[in-house]
Amino acid sequence: MQITGISMAKIDYTKLAISIIVCQVAGLIGSLVTFNSITTWYETLNKPIFAPPNWFFGPVWITLYFLMGISLYLVWSKGLDDRSVKIGIALFAIQLFLNAIWSPIFFGLHALQLSFNVIIIMWLFIMLTIVRFHSISKPASYLLIPYIGWVTIAAALNYFIWTMNV
Image (cartoon, rainbow, N blue to C red; front, side):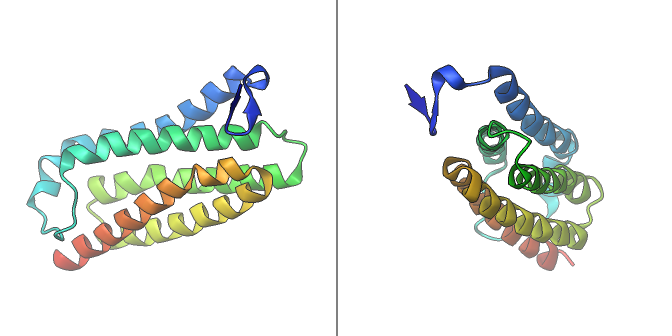
């Protein structure tokens, strides 16, 4: 049986679990700040018509972090001896770091312009990661497409919230 291009017999479940947990922890960091602000400060902001309901964000991000973890695992499983893998994982780490700090900047500091700048840089690093991952594992790159799609929407939402609340 094969899942995303690798045989079930070849799956390193420890690496897979670490990959998923690392991504979920990045989400947890953001959610610690977001949870308290979503029903207070965020609720008072002017938002564009396309803003999803508050309850929608949690399930979407949990799913995206899961897909990101599988993507990371597929690249990591190629071995760290390969320079391309190391670069891919470094790009992934940078975008994940930016992802983890975005929520504290937006929801914690209420720094709408700064958070917009961070999300644009994050988007660029996600794209660089997708391109690099594509040369290592096409399925790994494809698993990041929903993520960059959602971050595109989040960037637009961040921009409009910033400009509508100046």
